[in-house]
Image (tube, rainbow over all chains, first blue to last red; front, side, top):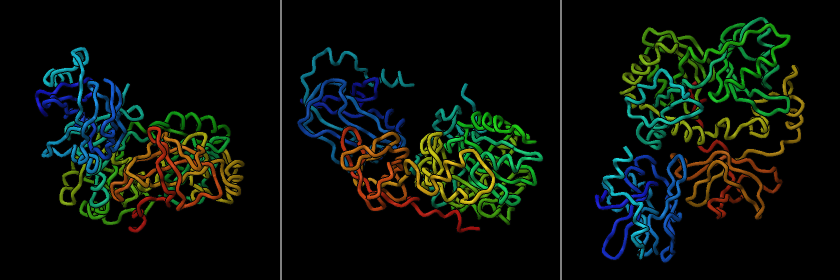
Length: 124
Length: 367
């Protein structure tokens, strides 16, 4: 996982990539979920507030709701993961982001996000 | 307080992910649920199911007593044979589902669900008036290891058990010089055995079975795969698919209920009436027609009307699609092949009624 990602306590991450942000779930979350068998992503152009549910990831055991770490508008979804959810468990596969968003979130929205290193420490 | 089996440290050492289940700290998976599932279908897996309950019923009236508390006819049970039973209440509702083994004349072993042992014992004690019978909970003395999969027989034979008991039979045996009871039963739909062993020997026996099983591809299997395996085999899970408001007939267990049992038993009137006319609801098998997964508690719809509820659902690693068990109102126009809908996150998704089990059971081939 990219060390520059900012994480939520509910195991999402957001990573700044130029003018866009990648949003996904943390490596810790993937490890905890085990075999991932279904991913439902929103449509391009849909808009979400911070902490709003934007996706569902299902492991063999259960369905988990995924929350937006910051507000934004979806500009791209990871179709590859929709078609092959098990790629999320594949350590050699790198494109694990769920959606790319455009965001005009202010400092307040970032205030409760954790640096990846702090997040990892907290999960141990 | 959460209980631990005598194999708890063994699971942790093997890197299992542990969860609380029915008051026990149990392994849910060691590697991957899907891999573990396929190991049991293609080779052999070993499960710690020591959380299950063992109750010994013995004494002069053990047979008439058992005949009063289950719909099955225990007088037909021959020595060393087992029968799948339900402990029913006065309304025919299922207090627990059990396997009853006849160990010898007037001595029976009951295997009960971990979450129901206390209710089972209470109910049995409430029903024992007038019977000369002893009911002893032996659960804390015994561990139960399940060895399941097509290579079980070869593995057991390599350990000197030349003659496995027949399907749904039990026999005394010796494994690595340890006295055990071996029964040809399981909860996976595969051929396999369940081995009852005193707690103090369970860790040694587990390690030895793992060691000897290497050449057959044995792997430890957690509760996660136990659940996906039993769902593919359409075997009921108490608390999901069975409860005190559901009769054996409604649960699709009519095959296990004798039509002409002479002895009276708890719930007989309701069950016999339902055998003739059907129940208030019926258990059906479903396959999803898209990639969505039906889960426990999701509503079932037909013609925009709610007609039932999913009680177990998930993926089928062997079929490669998503399957479920659901209770629906008995409607004349619905049968195998009909399309109904499951409400998933506020949207209706098509599902087809299919035959149960979802995969072919292979446990009866190897007698």
